[in-house]
View (cartoon, one colour):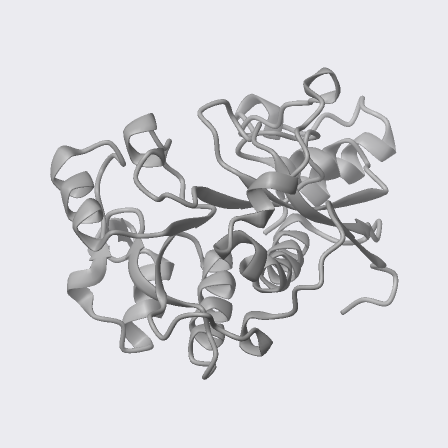
Length: 270
């Protein structure tokens, strides 16, 4: 990791929890967890969950994976599964437990999800809106890894928008999912100082890597319910939005200042 990327970790409460692997289980039965993610960076989180679930005293198991449907790649010639689905299959995860609904509110999908009786859902760049009828299924809720310091940069492109703004500091947040966009209570976050030479793909990968560690550290408190009680609500008055980058925004104009052009290149490279 670049030495100029400094990490500061914050937990929203005094916690004596340790990583899942070091936590004593009060029950021999592991709690079923469902993971939702789609792009390559999401695989980092899924891999961390797979590894943690193998520990002798692990509190959970990955019961199912939800990801985007197969899409055409290589100029539309091949219909390929999402990077997360490919990663899971390569790890030997059962294909019948990988769900690819067009929408997370589909009745058949929700029926299959309920049949699994998941205690908790984890999302990391899944890419679909989660309706209330989905959020009502896991009793421990749905927790999202979001690559910004919430309530800053709520939305689909937090890393790109932070780089566009020339942010010197950003981070990753672990928050409960609610119907409002990225507005749920924050369980924990980690702050990073941003190297002015870093590009969006590298920063995104770094944030999800750190976010996966944060998740594994916090899972015991999430699974015993204490994270719900002690998570901190966001200050909506400080919220900023991070919508997707439009085609028009991608154009470079040499009438713009050098710093603006630099930030756009950092945002769009990759």
